[in-house]
Amino acid sequence: MNLVEIVSAQREFDKKHGWTPHSNDAAEVCTFLARDLIGLFGEMGEFANIVKKLQLEAPSDMRAALAEHAPHLKEELVDFLIYVLRFAAHLELDLERAYLEKLSLNETRFRRFLRSAKTSDEGSDREPE
Image 1 (tube, rainbow, N blue to C red):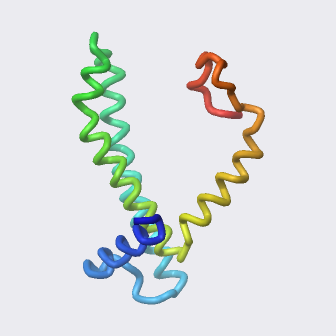
Image 2 (image 1 turned 60 degrees about the vertical axis):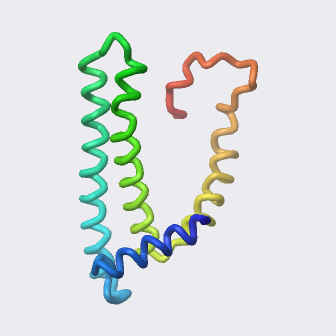
């Protein structure tokens, strides 16, 4: 299944449940975007709470603790994706095409951060400025 098909599948699921705008009316679409944004923030909060607990508890075996929480983190991550798919459907965005265009732009924009295979991972946790 490609991304276009995944967006379509989510759109159909949402239609069956009454979770899509009934028209292309901008105010209605904006209402659905706002509702889904709030839902996304809730899912992000659940994800962040798990990560926060891991950081605060600082278990002696972080790898084991992360593995224990990984199923829930993965579930929350899929929930993020569902909301992104819904945004794409509401905005009639070809998410696959838009992603590939943005990736191409970012290849140029962040070229200065490229690392060779021989480069160490030192500082790799920092975001590009």
